Image (tube, rainbow, N blue to C red; front, side, top):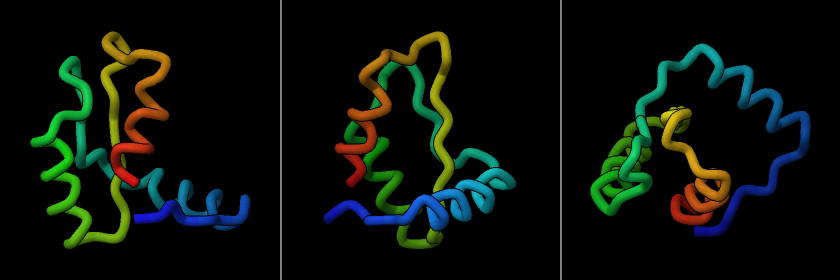
Length: 72
């Protein structure tokens, strides 16, 4: 699966739409597990937008880029 190429305006529009959503996927101390990836895959078949939340106390600096590459 290749990453989407979005213009800054498209990205801003999607962010504004996602702002009203409640997080569906909560990433905690365990990080991004195989079970979490299966859940994301299942949810992505039902909806076009997903919102993630990460535990601030357990977040690692590289976790955001790691999640992006694992999901893509």
